[in-house]
Image (cartoon, rainbow, N blue to C red):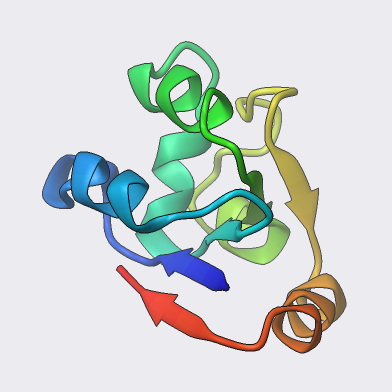
Length: 95
């Protein structure tokens, strides 16, 4: 399943999100969700310890002026990669 986080991690229940993910799922941080990918954030450690791949959308990172502040533990992806993730995963859940 592809999970997308579009809200700020401070306005979302990350623990509930992680209770719903399964090994092999993917999480894509979009819109304000990219704030969870900022280096040094407690959310980076929480997400990187989950059994899923975690990515953040480059256009949303750039739109928020966060280029250069994203943790190396998070994959930065394009819209084309977003489409590929959607094709690879049969279901989708937005947080």
